[in-house]
Length: 211
Ligand code: 5GP
Image (cartoon, rainbow, N blue to C red; front, side, top):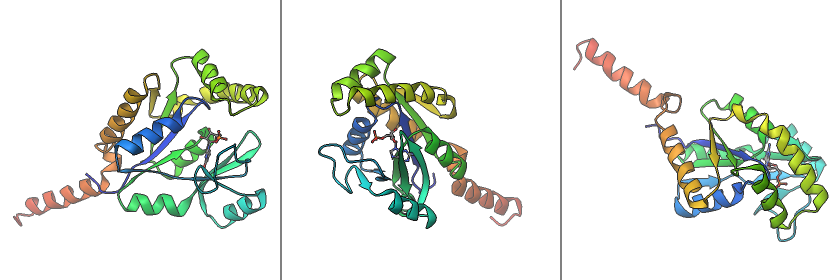
């Protein structure tokens, strides 16, 4: 089908294990790249600029917005987060599947601008498991965990906007399911426009008796 890569939006509650799923997907298959977002939040211990995020001041972030340097951005728990335009567009053109690990406001903006994007929502099997994973991660204070859990309530309201729900119970199965969904998505007419135009033209040739 078309050679262009698929723009994959991966959302899910904080603590759903999106990061681990993406890491494993990229380790196993080389057609995926992850877009590194820009954010104004403080780096967590061990996080490096240009690896997990591009850490920027609010002023720098707003300048990038003004220069149309982001394909989407949103405010989440008091900080800006956004996806840099150039990296995404260059990789899609080069035929790679680009993953955006972003929250729902951003996902909805992507859907508007890129109707051929694929929106996946990753969730743990139940709410208790979500809390257990957030606490177990040990990177946030209880206050931040509470904030993220109440944010999860809001996010659960938006799940219907996604194409598929992927339950992250067994990591390997979850990774395979994401890969399968992406490959199936390639067959959808919305992502095969070049192929469709080509075969239409060829058929017109027959109809005119050219071949
Ligand atoms: P965290 O602070 O835990 O790294 O991320 C908080 C939330 O922001 C997560 O739901 C994450 O997916 C989302 N996020 C990260 N980067 C972006 C981005 O570029 N745009 C949007 N809209 N959300 C993002």
